[in-house]
Structure formats: C-alpha cells, structure tokens
Image 1 (cartoon, one colour):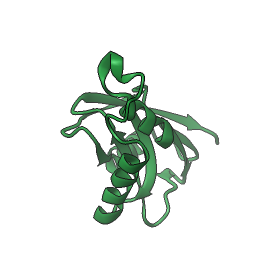
Image 2 (cartoon, rainbow, N blue to C red):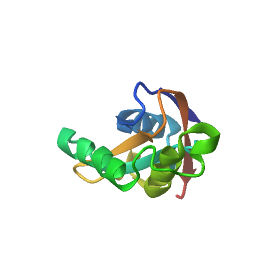
Image 3 (cartoon, one colour):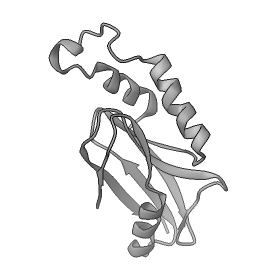
Length: 132
C-alpha cells in the first residue's frame, strides 16, 4: 500500500505517524513488522522526536553537512546533488515492530517523510508483515 504525500518546500520533514498507524490498524496484523520506505532518491524516511526545534536542527545539520551548490558533479545534470547526498545520510526506510496490533514506537518517536528536493508529489510504501 502507498501513502501519497504532497510536499510544499524544497526541504522539509512531514510527520506521517498517524497515517502509518491507521494502515497498521486496517491491516488487522496483531504481531509483525511494518516497513516504511520510499523509492525516491532525493527523500528519506526517519524516526525521531516530533519537536519543532529538533526538526529545525535536523534540517540545519543536513544543510551544514551537505550544502546546496557546493560544486557537486551531479549538479551538471539537474542541480540537485545535495538532495541525493542528504537522502543517503537519512536512509530510505525504517522497519518497526507491530505488537498487539499497534506500532511499537518509543514515547517520543514519530515517523517522518524527509523531503530533500521538493515541492513534489511523493509516495511512501508500507509493507506490513505478519509474524504470528
């Protein structure tokens, strides 16, 4: 199944926790694993705390580590090499346990779609596996 996401900025974190939880509920799986992934090479999926300052810190860190327009070879093609490199640092998927029909998330954990080259229409793939 897919979640369709419309991003609004070049770089942003979008909390998709409630949508993923709803898909797990609909699946009826009581014990298993939910794999959240994206096939986009300029986006990622991460799990972390949903706090405004931390979200800004994450985006600022990525910009410091991989600044836009720093002379990357790929920029000769479509001027978004920094987006690809930032996505590599984040990763394209997360796997979370399903326990008693619910995602096993820590108290402060949220699931984010990380847009690095928007705004765009994006898709997040959910694969829910039953282990019981």
